[in-house]
View 1 (tube, each protein chain N blue to C red):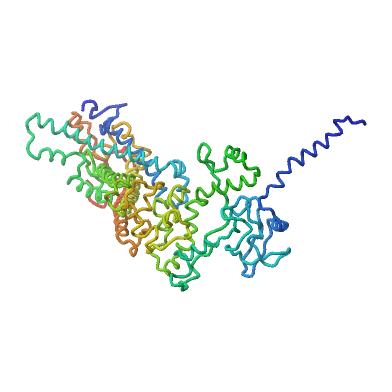
View 2 (cartoon, rainbow over the protein chains, first blue to last red; view 1 turned 180 degrees about the horizontal axis):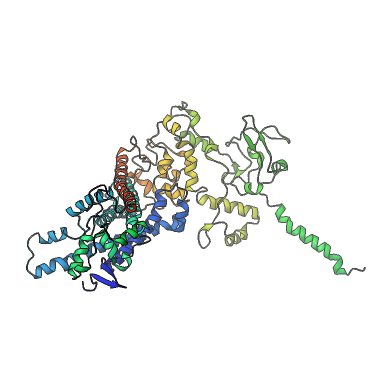
Length: 277
Length: 352
């Protein structure tokens, strides 16, 4: 993991490692294909809407847009399987294998390692949500001390994960309906169509409202967060969202004396300026 | 001034040329206007308000009419009651009349009478099998409820299939056939008939005039607003984007090789969509050739309502709840977050 130092300093500013190049490329493919899938799928879902034929014709209309949709769907399904193998690879290489080498791998340890991965929801997320509510309802000025992955990021990860299972599986079956209805009754397709399109609408709204608010439109990141490009997060955002992890990383790097106070604490002028601008 | 010989004959040549060029323009009409009906009906404004207060337009656009499937039929062929000019208000055209066309295979006068006999035994017939008039007989269609005078949609098959007439093919027609009128007519007729003269959306809209009428659907105890539910399937959606490859109502509801006028109720064992036969509907060579009969089990006319398809209704309801349940709290957080950022240091609790 030395490829990516935990803290990079550029122009006197600290940047904190978040995502490897591999992960960023995965995210880029995910984002690109989903946008195309939404643009080629929604005109069909809302075929009666006035904008539908115009949007659809941008992708070649009924003659070509379904093919564009299927090609992008296939890429996304491929990415999903790649990601599963990537997860298995990473967990084996960085967690299971080292433990094995040390001879410390006991029964159920591998399972425990999977369940304690940083993306797996845990009790701290529940406390963070409670603390966020306290903050949002003006009960405190202190934001929750986020860990490396906050509940928002876990939500952003697991919602598309579940979405891809539902939309991907239903999409593949609808695509090869002749094959699957050799066994399944055709009536199943009615339900798969509902699942495919309704879950897709949920996913699209989730990503374009919630995810884009957090990474694009929120006052702290507007006009655009850059972590998905650079893989590194600025100190300011690190303090705001991942304070607990920030302190941990700073201590590990021997920079205890440079640790900033938590977001919203008194006397931290830069955030006041940021919030009122 | 003395004119040279060439100067003398120039106006003669010029005028001859002019007449020669304009000659084909004058003789482009297919159905000879023997009764001279266009004397009046060529005027675009020819119209009147009829007894029911409806505006009636009597203008005939000759070039459009000559591109329609009835181009060869003369006005008098259908309007048999009109024998003099000026004429009294015309009687409604009876489509079963023997028009002046001779049907070439039997060399008898042409008529749509056979269609009437098909309709009689079909689901759209006005009498039941016992010969009694059906209930709500006024709801059953007449010819013109479904048909107008469709335009030719010729296809070129020369090197690839495309709309229009293949000039290259016409050259081959002219080897044997001398009259261009006949060639165009025949070409148009045959190639128009090799595919459908209407796109699926047109057909669906035509059927919808009755089958999406809630009152009519209820009166006849039909299970669905048929075109609405068709519109919720991929086929129906593709049809709204003017896809011509998807099936319309007629493609599934009529046995292949039969006239659309022979459409039968799904309860009739001879119907293409009868429980026992419908497995074959999807698996045709043009549609889903490798499909098993199970594919036809797909609910083509499922509506998302509680009475007609409760399972799908609740399934959709689940996704609506899931969507609302996910998005509303998150949007609430976004809203609170925006408000909170205006007052970063305000609190009603104890300051830490």
